Image (cartoon, rainbow, N blue to C red; front, side):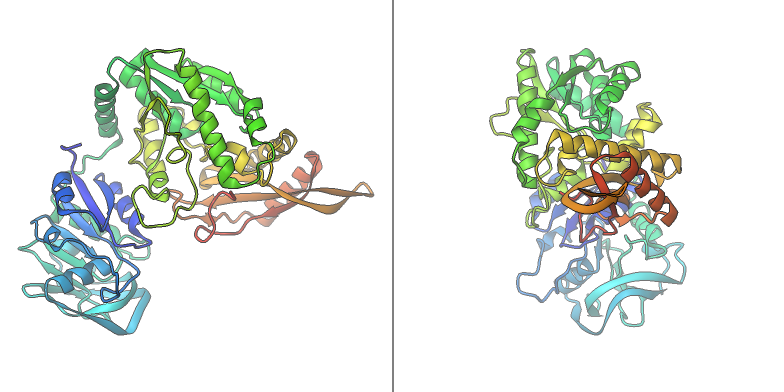
Length: 513
């Protein structure tokens, strides 16, 4: 919205670009990522209070190295260049950039030589995170050197009059000890931000926007049972009241007893008066014989839409479909990045049939998961629901590797229920971003009661994360894993071997499919 203060992040391909966004939003300032191909006109249209140029993997001298319209730097809007962003600024404005003899990767000591503006209140000597092969050998004319390191004599530069600043290190990563303070200084000392990006303001802004878009028409909300769609439904209901038609489809791909439990909460605690549709046989029939993960996702996504469209025909003035699409979904589906490879199709973003009659309402398209949770709390949704782990749109279909059948789903449901129950009993649930079981298309030999068995292998996955963009595997106590494995194998018929996934994202994804 025009009156929202926005910090624009121009992406040169850094692995840390999303982290910059998150750090800014943690200071209650809205930020948004655009590719380096953004036009001068688009920047003027956004009218940001500040611009950050991200790092990037290339040298400014490489053929095809990313560039921006240099006039963007000279708009009079405060600019902060990070790593490659600093080097681009320097080269554009007549400074010197050369390949470094001693490349800096990892921790370095930053020595601040000017404690005003960007480094206000920052310790004179502190640890920062470096990741660069080029470095500045000469600052552009009228720039002051404000910090140095052993291998970067021009580690930070500034032109206060032109409001252009640059740092060679990455303030957005946790390894830079005073990184949050440096970003805070850019936002509030230099850009003069007000810090009004709060859940309450987002709710008020969204309700106003939703009312103006939907008017007196009806909207259908796809209630999957996850946090995103549920919070979206409660928000939209605040905007349009009884004109919201909330529908929950039991796909047959839900966790144990989940449709019944969440249905009760929808009506009794959230006043959503939802419509329950059991389409489990329809989904399973369409998935019969399908083993390719992408094909599964597309079948499930398309079937979802088909069912909703059939239901929508009962409401002649239903014109909108509400979905809980998140910002990471948009980023990973390349709607923002443009040039990067699609990792996997998110049914919230891709795979919608062109013939779909309903227009999309996606109130959380610009939010990260923890921001949606904050909005949910502000809307008084029960905490035990808000803290639920993410659940994939295609449900257990992407956790049964290979062909999906009812028998396999039932095995997985029982094992998953034991896993989550044990995590909750150990008071570990809220320390984990996401935990689940995966049924592998592998059978192994086992022995049970002196008899040889040939049953499925079950993989357990639990990760810690902030927003799902990166993740580390959760380190359970060995006794916990041993007892859990024993319980699953004893109680779940069809499983005789349990393994634990110790992969991080990247290079692995959180889900297996």
